[in-house]
Image (cartoon, rainbow, N blue to C red; front, side, top):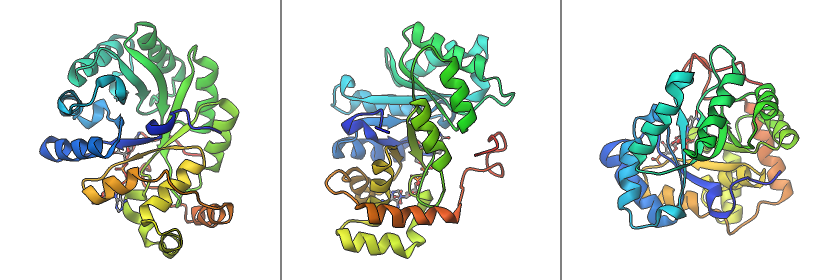
Length: 272
Ligand SMILES: NC(=O)c1ccc[n+]([C@@H]2O[C@H](COP(=O)([O-])OP(=O)(O)OC[C@H]3O[C@@H](n4cnc5c(N)ncnc54)[C@H](OP(=O)(O)O)[C@@H]3O)[C@@H](O)[C@H]2O)c1
C-alpha cells in the first residue's frame, strides 16, 4: 500500500497543541529543517498563527501541502462551507491542499459528511479531501459514497497499538492511512526494543519508530517543540529497517496502548 503523499509530504509537522510564540518558533524551525507538509485543524484554534508563519517564512506557498480539518460542530449544511471559507481566510490561502473531516459525525451520518466534503472540492475551496478517526467500516462506506478519492484516513498509529485491521482496509479501499500520536506522546520510549534498534542502526529512538510507520505505507504527523527532535523526526529517509526488525516492532502492538479513547474524546467511535 503506497503512501498517498509523495516524497517530502510523507512527513508532516503537526501543530496541535501549539499556539502563539511556541507555535511560530517550532513551525519556523520545522520549515527550516525541510518540512513542507503542515497539519492543523479548526479545533486547534491556531490556523491564523499557522497561516501567518507560512506566509512569512520565505518558502513559496506552492511548495507546501497544508492540511486542515473541519470541526465536527461545523459538519452541517449551513455551517460547513462557511467554516472552510473561514479556514482559508485564517490560513491566508486561496485553496486548502487537504481538507479532512476531523471526526466521524456523532449521529453516524457519513453520507452527509462526505457530500459536504465533496462540495468543498467542487467549489474549488480545497484540492484533496479525506477523513480522520474513521473505523474500517466507515472507510468502506465513505469510499463508496465519495465521488472524489479520499486521500487519507488520519488515525492514531504507533508501535504500541495494533492497527492491522485499518491497514488491511486501507489496502482494500485505496484510502491510505496517516499517523498521529506517532511516538505515542513519548510512551514508545519506555520500550527497551526501541533503544536496542536505535543503537543497532545508529539512529535516535524516535527515528526507528517513524521509519517503522513509513515502511508500513503510512504517512507520519509528528509534533515537537524541541529543535533536536524536530530535526531527527524529519531525517528518517536515509535508512531501512529489515523485515526481521519490522516484525520485532510489530510484536509491540500487543501492548494495545490507545491514547485517544472515549475517556479523553467522548465523541470517539467504537474503534476496530
Ligand atoms: N486527527 C486527530 O484527531 C489528531 C489527534 C491528535 C494529534 N493529531 C495531529 O498529530 C500531531 C502529532 O500528534 P501528537 O502531538 O498528539 O503526538 P506525538 O507526536 O506522538 O507526541 C508529541 C510529543 O512527543 C514528543 N516527541 C516528539 N518527537 C519526539 C522525539 N523524536 N523524541 C522524543 N520525544 C518526542 C514531543 O515532545 P517535545 O516537544 O519535547 O519534543 C511531544 O510532547 C499533532 O500535532 C496534530 O497535528 C491529530
